[in-house]
Image 1 (cartoon, rainbow, N blue to C red):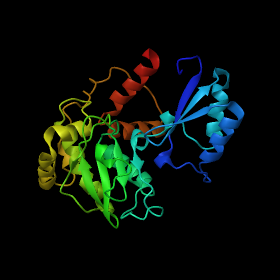
Image 2 (image 1 turned 135 degrees about the vertical axis):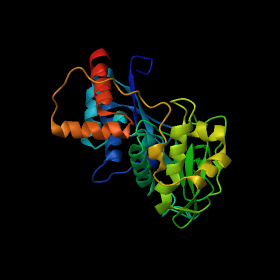
Image 3 (image 1 turned 120 degrees about the horizontal axis):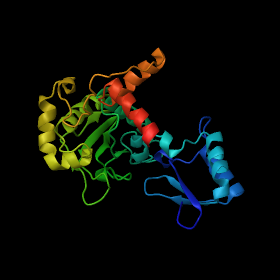
Image 4 (image 1 turned 90 degrees about the horizontal axis):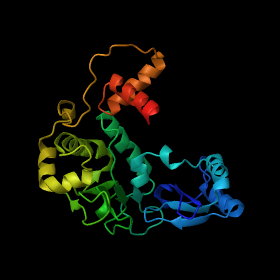
Amino acid sequence: EQGDGKLMLGVNVEQGRVRDTPELRLKTCLRTLVDNYGVDLLLTPSQSIVLRNIDPAHKYNVEAVLREHGVKLIHEIDAITRKSIACPSFPLCGLAMAEAERVQPQINARLNAKLREMGMANDEFVTRTTGCPNGCARPYMAEIAFVGSGPNSYQLWLGGSPNQAERTGMATSIFKMPLTDLEQTVEPIFAMWKSQRNAPDEALGDFCHRVGVDKVEEFMQSYEPGSWKTMPSPFAPTPLPAPDANVGISSELLEKLTTEATARDMDPASLLDMIVREALEG
C-alpha cells in the first residue's frame, strides 16, 4: 500500500536490462501493464522498477500479467541477485576491459552456490561488477565488488556498507583475479565472516570494515581450502533435544529437507520444527 489507498509493487530488473527474451518478456509486460491498468513506472537506483498507482481491484490481474510474461515476483528472486548491479560493459562500452552485465548472473549463481555449500544460505550481501575501474555500477559502495582490470580478470573490493551509505569499500591487493578463481577467492572470506562475526546479523561489508582488509588478506593467505568445515559459526542454531515423537514424511521430502538444512547450517529436525512453528504460530 503506497499511502493513498493504491498499491505499489517492486519488479526486479536484472542488471537493468529491459528487453524481451524467450524466457522473460519484460518489455512487453511493462507495456501491457501501462496500457491496460494505467500503472506508473518509477526507476530505482538499483536498476529496478516500482509499479505505482495500482488499483487494488487490479492487484491479482497485475500479478497474473507478470507471471504470464515470465516475470518473477520479488519473493521468488534470491537476495544476492536482487542486490546486484553490473554495468553494460561488453559489447556496448568502448572502455570495457572485462565482462560485467553478461557474467553477473553467473557470478550471482556461483556466490549463492558457495554460500549454500558452506551452510550460509541465509546470508546475503550487496555485490557489484564492472568492466573497468570507472565504476559505472558503483562497485566501490558494495560489500564485495569485482572491478574489471583485464580480460576475464578483476580487482577485488571489500567493506562497503550494506545500506550503501556512510563509506566506500576498500581495495584489496588482489588486482587480477581470474573469474575462474571466484570460488577459491571468496571461500576464505566467507569462512572468516561466518566464524568471526560479532553478531548473527553482522553484514559482510560491516565485518570486513571492522576487521580491516589487512586482517582479511592475512586470513586468506593462511587458509586451506575446505577449512570452513572445522570453523563453526558462534551463532549457529542450537540443535533440538532428542525428539519425543515422530512425523512421517516421504523420502523425497526428507532428502530436500536435509539439503536445505545443511545449506543453512542446521540439522533437519530443527529446520522442520521451525517451518511447522512458523506455519502454525505465524
